[in-house]
Length: 76
Image (cartoon, rainbow, N blue to C red; front, side, top):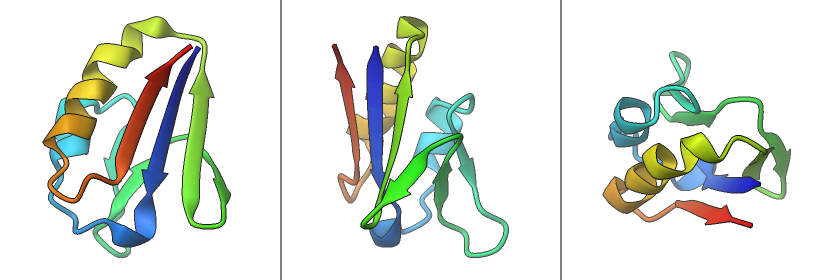
């Protein structure tokens, strides 16, 4: 299981996550911030639990590239 968390309200819209992990991230046309696809939101944190371990590497790369460190990726 891969758990991805995004603090969307702190996003600066750099687009790195959408470039590095396009299967899980998109940029909103409405406000220019990152959107974690199919995530649930709770208290400003958008979380996705995905059983596909194949996404871990791309999402981890996106998290490391994020200049404001608002993406976390865990593999359990």
